[in-house]
Image (cartoon, rainbow, N blue to C red):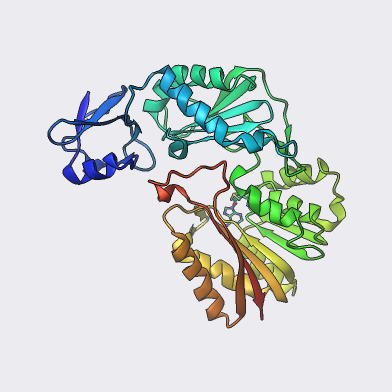
Length: 390
Ligand code: SAH
């Protein structure tokens, strides 16, 4: 099927921009075809092959500006992605990392992560999922060393589970992976999440290398406590992990245990972070280093948390329970907030609290989470390391 795009859209697509928006299409088909389509300009001249699909962002992706989309095309993408990650494959200290980062590797709609000899596929829409067989076969041609895989269905697929086994061997539960020499317990077939967010490896690495050595660390929105484990490995004197999900208690305990870290100096609290701020103030608790890593959007009881509206509040509350000379690691994965805007939100809150501060470091996505230079909005992660003096 040929899909004609507007003049404006033709210009950006010809220069390599991969994401299709509704307003780019001249005449939107009533139902999106489950086939590859040919995008063309208003005079019918070919631009690229790709597909249409309902998904979180946009309505489709351009994939190939030259050759048709065949097994050979996918093998080419996978081969190139593999070469780009050679340094990871040779690193004995890290066994979990991203192999395919969607549009960053030229394949909008699919990510693949490696966990030891296993792969986890995440499908973001129904159209790409319809090509699952040819894609998985091509993947296996290139990544022969992967001998088992799971898949996550990240679109509302009728009758499909969130997670299931895809091929080959089944992984142990937990599956112990390593990252910069630290062990993490992961579960490859438990809902959409595995126990570790691989995009935060450089932040964990800073902590392992002693960013908070000798310090007390408060890890807010701690999930399985990965930042706390990294901090404890890096010599932090004590850690407190706060998350409102009940699962976080057992999951976090397990992460410490698999690293033989003594639990006496680690506190794990199942609580809303805003309640914990109040509790800590009442008890006059203070922390040398506070890590903030909220979800980009969350609803708890009556409160809705968004980065634009509430991140400043998190910073201000943190200042109240920070040591006189402390640090804050402020992270967000909200794609709709640019680095500049995020800095502004954080700095305004620091200024409102009248503290002096310095941005020590800024991290964005690590190299395995490859970003398409034509699609900078794919670079969603922003992490500020701040020294603060009250
Ligand atoms: N920092 C973690 C990932 C955080 S994921 C890591 O690096 O592994 C976001 C977490 O925030 C989830 O575990 C969720 O349960 C938790 N969460 C969401 N809203 C919360 C709230 N109001 N208080 C405490 N935890 C919250």
